Structure formats: structure tokens, C-alpha cells
Length: 210
Ligand code: URA
Ligand code: SF4
Image (cartoon, rainbow, N blue to C red; front, side, top):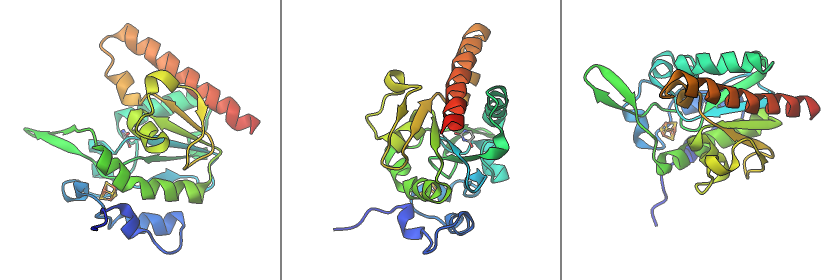
């Protein structure tokens, strides 16, 4: 039987953040590398107690080669700051390491990765967790949550709970900062941001207690 393509074929023999980053740059584990500019690997503290996992790089991240440098990243950093979590103490990455988009004229619009792409990319996330060994992993949005907790995970049912995953002992799923930016009006945005902040404060307390 033909084995499915995945990032597993590109994993380095010796796992370190540097070796993973170098190997991921040449990953062809699914088709997304064909259209994106570059692999956007995770970055941050090598032994961070807290790891934050987004969905996939966006337009700015694809150009820069760094995770969460665009508008969603700005909102995330503001919330981390308010929750008294030092961003420099965290490790930040994405479930999928290449930007998936559709072109609309000159603009590149985010497209949701398929389950097969999330699964293909999972070996990178798994290896990042194995190397960094965070106490807590925060899944930002449903794609990251399902990568960590399985496809039947529902954010609407289990948001803000500490759960265990085959990949990490303690995972908490919350919304993606982009969903806050997409809120239909200011009042909804304010409420959604406050709820997001509450989740991060919960995480901040748990990291301190651990
Ligand atoms: N959204 C994500 O999920 N990740 C990024 O790196 C940027 C935006
Ligand atoms: Fe590899 Fe992930 Fe990029 Fe697919 S999205 S090519 S699995 S790094």
C-alpha cells in the first residue's frame, strides 16, 4: 500500500529546534509548499513553559518567515501582555507551517487548511513539543485544537478547559485572535477580547502554579 505523504519523511535524525527549523524549510509533506513563499517555523524560547499554537501563517507571516507578525500577532501580544505573560518566555508556532490562500486580484485571502494538510504537518508540531517540553500548550482556534486534541474536538464545548492530548500533557483551547478581529461590531469584539483574556489569565495562573 502506498504510504501517505507527510512531514514525517523530512524529520531530522537529531531533534533540536535548529535541526527541525532547517529540515522544515525543505518540507514537501503536502502540496501547500508549492504556493507559499516559505515555511514559517515556530520560534521563541527553547525551553518555554508555555507554547502557543495558531492555525497557519497569514500573508505577513508568509512574507516575513516568522509566526504571528501580522494583525493577529499584534492582538495576541497585547493580550499576553495584559495577562502578564512575557511573550519572550513563550514559544509560538502553528499547526500548519505553510500559508494556504486564494488569490483575489492582488490580495491573498486566507484559506482554511484541510484535515489532510493538518495531519501531514503534525510531525513538526509533535517534534516542537517534544523538544521544548512546555508545561502547557494553548491552542488558538479550532484548527490548532483539533490538531492537538483530535478532529472531534469542539471549541464551543471545551473552550478554556485543561485537557490532555497524546502530544502534550496539558492543552487549553481558546479562540483564534483573528476571530476577535473579525467580530461584526465593536461591542462583540470587546466581549470576545475579554473572554480571550480570561482564558490567558487562567493559563498564566496555571503556569505559575506548575
Ligand atoms: N494566524 C495564525 O494562526 N498564525 C500566524 O502565525 C498568524 C496568523
Ligand atoms: Fe510540510 Fe506542513 Fe508545509 Fe505541508 S504545510 S509542506 S506538511 S511544512
